[in-house]
Image 1 (tube, rainbow, N blue to C red):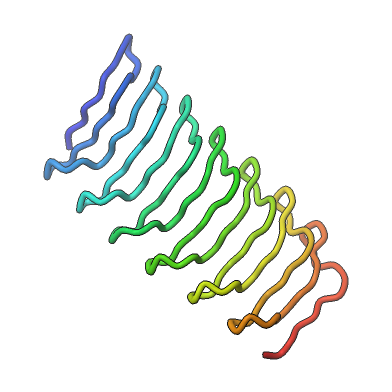
Image 2: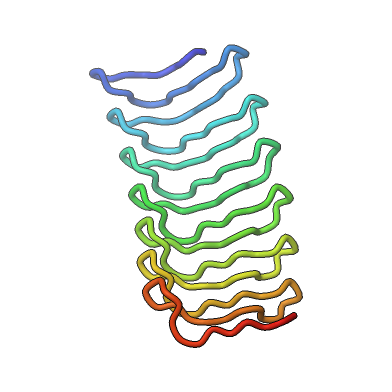
Length: 165
């Protein structure tokens, strides 16, 4: 393995490259004052992109993408100051949407949706500060409601109804 890096006054500064024994790039990142700053890319053995992240002063900030080994996006998320913030999406190996979750300061906050393999909505629920809060609706694959109810502070609250298909 070979590493190419630059230092100023003992601190990493600029581009960082990690090259494997087959002379293929495994990682490319950028440093400022010894902290990750800018885009970080990681590659699999075949040279395909497997991870893409952005950093500001050593903390993940901005878009993060994880890729399947054969290509295609597995996960897309947004970070701010090292924590998930905003929407995170997961995809199957067939590039179909699996789930969409909302985050705020690294905690579940907002709508969470999971999907059937045909991308029809399976479950929709809501969170506040990492606790289930509000409506919960689960659907059959044909789109009809299977189960519905409410959460209050992460516990089922009130009437819950289950339906037959």
